[in-house]
Length: 147
Picture: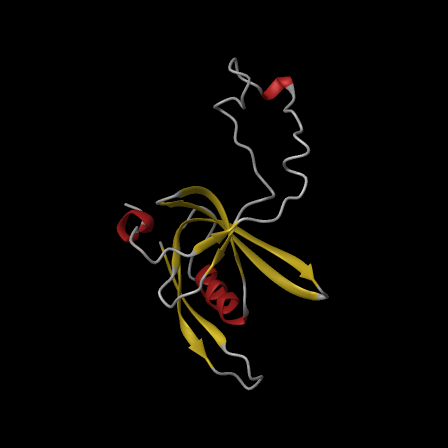
């Protein structure tokens, strides 16, 4: 049983779809070598989309649960930023989801990786509140559970 099956109650994080201004104007056809008889992607193949939604944790208790796919280190506005990638099965969405890192979440994920978290692991990330910082902006606090 996965975390998602045990906890599929209200409290799932909201998903925000990325902007894709050309999606409606430009449809790039798939090459024939990957098409099935029905003209769609063959069932034995999987497509990786660069346009996966990201989880938005608005309320204390919001969470995502699924399988950990790994982490990307991105350079944004001159800063290193981690994007954690998951495959989830939410009540109204099944597929890839990204979670943007933060100092606290990055530390939790690093600790989890030291403890055995690896791609394919079942994981739950939950927003559990905020804490004031010396910088004047609150830090989000996270719970990471995995197996």
